[in-house]
Length: 135
Image 1 (cartoon, rainbow, N blue to C red):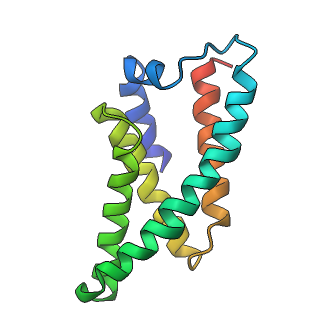
Image 2 (image 1 turned 90 degrees about the vertical axis):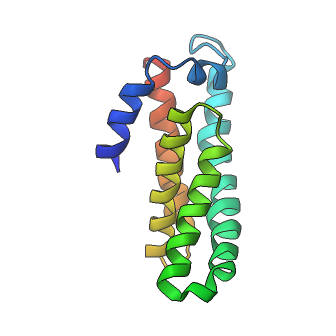
Image 3 (image 1 turned 45 degrees about the horizontal axis):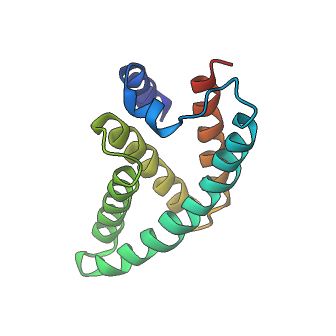
C-alpha cells in the first residue's frame, strides 16, 4: 500500500487542501486532542460506517453480478465514496480512495471483521498526522 501512497503523498506536499483540512498548527495545544480524535476515534467510526455498513450493503446491491463481481464493485464504489467524502481536491480523493480500497481488502481478508481495518486506519491517520506535524 505504501508503495502507492508515498508517491501520492509526495505529490500532495504542496497542496493547500491538506492545510485547509487541518487548520490547527502543530505547535498549538489543541493539536494533541485533535490528533487523538482523528487517529483514535474518527477512523474507528469510519470503519464501522464504510466497511461495516456501506461495503456490506453494496455487496448485496451488486449481488446480481455474481460473488466476485459483487465484491469487486462494492470495494470500488465504497472506496470512491470514501475518497469523495474526504475532500474536493483530486489528489486528496485519490489518496483516500486508495486507502479505502486497501481497507476494504483488509476487511474482506479478515472475513468481515473490522478490528484489523480499524487498527490499520488508526495507524495510517497517526502516520499522516505525524508527517503533517513535522514531528
